[in-house]
Image (cartoon, rainbow, N blue to C red):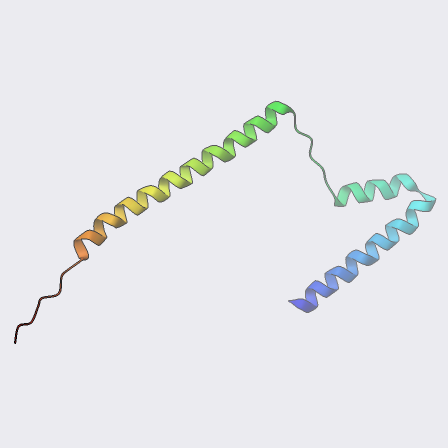
Length: 89
């Protein structure tokens, strides 16, 4: 895994170096190549609010599902508990 990561870093360095050198002769092409690598997303305020609300709703679903599972397990655990019998000698 380390070797693969080293190869990826070398490839990224070489690609960045080529883009830098090429941007001196054609700055627009260099800019397009950099933007293709580092994509930015523009959202309107409404789209941001909608996506944020979806995240909150999904979080609530996960939490409520987790609570439900805990409640079910607590009921089962209560039935499984047994007291040890005392031995009198």
